[in-house]
Image (cartoon, rainbow, N blue to C red; front, side, top):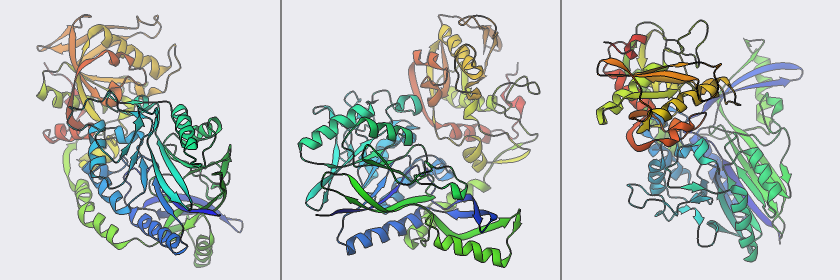
Length: 567
């Protein structure tokens, strides 16, 4: 008996509800073209998925539409609606399952719980252990019946079962097992080893005579390859996280895994790019033992009618335009679907006006351009002129909740310089601080604060360690220090002072100070391990961009002096 399945899959859509501009380099009959094309968006995905489902129904075959995680972040839609628009639009797309990605946790667990509560589809994170979750918190994850998590009693992942002719098809969701290093989940949930959890779950399924098994993964392509090598019995891995295009897209001038459909240890591995620009559409055939034996289809970009082509940086001539049009209509790398009207209307009516308003909403004025550099340079020995302002915003918000001693932010969390003129909400939320991450207040001992400063700078300069880059360089509000790179580790930071009582005062090693930082930094990443010694955490109910908007709104002009302490 043949076992066929129609499959649609997306991943890392990151709130890109509308089409995104994608740049391609294409050679047609020896002539090099540069193509700028609007691709994707949820309305085109809706049409593509509906047509696949209809074809499957006509062929009396099952179909699946899967999302491999990271719906959150990425656009002004998320800055404005914090996931509420995501779940409403995904409900209209009606995926059969979605794995929870690391960026779903960027604002902690509460938005994830609210997302799951409103979702009309299963959310999978089979290696997420909630056995220690505080059930008295406002938004716990564990009570949600549509969350498929780790089953502590059976020591396996909870899984979905779908019919496949006379067999059953299992779907296991596996998310990143280093979540606490790359995301900001609450401390009362843990993430178990992806390989061990998958292996135990597949052994259980095999004992149930279930051989057809899909792993819906948010591990990244290379980790999916390692998972397939390590665990026997996986039919198919539908992945996300690394924004990989599985297939050879080099003829479009794009990075990809540069191969056709990849089978590793008899497991087919697929991933469909990013930002809702592209989609995987395929008909799969399985044998009785669960192996995918053939695939018709693959990953393609959802091309809109809005594209422009250039040769030698000049708009194409009519014959060249015709040649490009002919290429696009016949290329397997592009698919052509109209925007589904109801989805497009929903976006245009309920969400786009708020985003357009952000472009018009002037928050403050920048009288003189402010330069952002991650670490100090010869030309800017004091470093960024923007990062201290972000720290000042954190401090301003935190100090309204509890008396606060200092604010800290890593340079990599600030993305752009600020040009002279009006500063809009869209510029703040979309470019300056595009990652919607919570700010958190905490207590820390002075001795640990010294460790934080030294660790972050050592990491930025790879001083005695293998660092992750200068994005970790620390900026402060109401705190100053001296760093001497040539001294031994543990002695490089001295003369730490905090501005208190209208004057600078020396830090005391055993005294507790209240600080405020992003939840990302507070998780101890990139040299900030000293922040793991903090306590009395207070979520301030604002993201980084929210705090900057609130701070800047009450300032007529934003300048480098704004963040300086005045006596």
